[in-house]
Image (cartoon, rainbow, N blue to C red; front, side):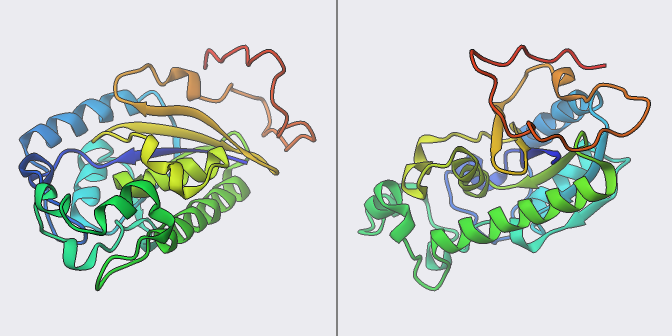
Length: 234
């Protein structure tokens, strides 16, 4: 199966003001645009087979600025969690809401008033990533790398699924603005290759050049006993 790079959008005006944007059409601020330009330079080292994005404008701006030469496909499954009545509220105020401890400690039970359940968000986001990964693999082979631009909680939920941990542990995961997280899918399990990467060299994610496309192998899902040797790219 292919490898997905999960890109969180750059910093927004809501991030800077300490608010919860949700589905609101908030845009990147100047810092966010600079972050996106920097990640775009790093991504030049990676041949991307496909680019997919949440429909919200902050994600669409991110891929347009970072990857101007790529066509981006909109995927509704990657949209931010629907926070309902929480949207647009300051986080400091929300921290006093009785639902806040549930979101922090038992997110699988959290249902936002007038919005979405966190468990439902996690299920549709993971399904969207796996669906696109299967499509990219079918069209470009198991060495393909593709990118999905989404939101912090969505990316954290996808990472938790990749690690095989319960959604109630996903608040232990961090996904900063304009960070990259890499997950390599295989027939039986995913591998977390990068997490919250905001400045590392991406060359190691570039598949080796081959004379002919590689076919899936029976041991693709095996973990290297003692640790992976690493990759050099090229």
